[in-house]
Length: 435
Image (cartoon, rainbow, N blue to C red; front, side, top):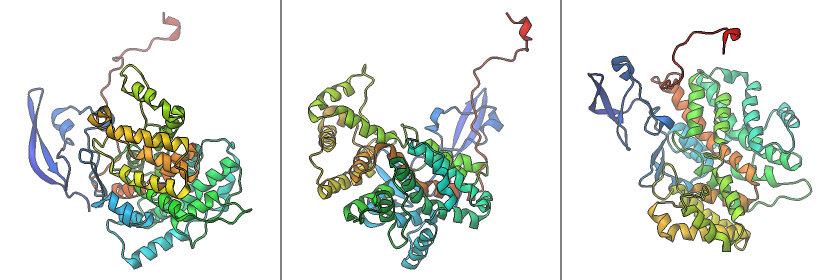
């Protein structure tokens, strides 16, 4: 599975009068990489790459991104094909196992997920310790980590069977946890899962059904939720995925590693981007104020920037955004919300970004966060739940990447280096002698 790179050439680096030869490898696609593992041993120097923007931390066969061309592949399959033709659990199987499932394989896999959707009754007591206005991500970070207390077998991450069972439990229980967090915030009783419903429908029912009324699912909303989860399933070595890999490299159990990923995702520059985008739309307030904010976005001296436009990786149109754009329009049609102020502002901003010379030249296209925030708002989720929904979809990517890392014999405990710029060695002076 691992170590399928091919050495294509050698790079020569001259350091302090010494020439070091470093192998250059090629993968299936994407740029070649220079292997610097032996650099310190042979030349006594490290590389410096803040943010690791030019550093490959691992070899992976899960997800490929070409930001220049706007390509996102999961196990070789384009994201738009998966979002259009498959369901979330089928994508989960693909990411975890490397191939799309046959009908018997999918039935067995989805059956295993269904068997583990319930939470231990003691887990519900955790919520009583939170304030009612606790941020949903604070509760998710704590409760995911707490799952390890109920499944002590998962402590041995070297056991493939226990590890795989932990992955199944995380995929199965994350919707139940997320729904309980939502219900706790709004002061409604918890709703348990029903095993004859699909993954997305079950989650929506746990969030929005109440005992006083019969829950009537909307097929368009269910499909939109399923697509949201697919589009958020994995995105290569981003901040939260790298955090999960780094935590797991120490031998930490899957629940601890995923809890670390949840904490990393919480940041507004990562999973919180769609929440920030919707807050921006509400700040704009009305369509007639859009020119004012567009002018501010173009002003280099104004700290304001439009959220949901452009992407650190994609220098072309985000392929996930195309799918999400279609989904947003379907939701608007099905839920009859075309005339809402938020939707009107969003659609006008979308039009400007696709036509205005400034945005087109800088390739500031609407990204997936722009559309997903609108979609989640249309479905009925409050903004502070958006990142929880992101974590719900991303869990399968985290556990797939974690498993790949554990099974890779070349991986060791993560230990980034640094360049030290602090004080030089000095002698301690007793406090009474300091001036």
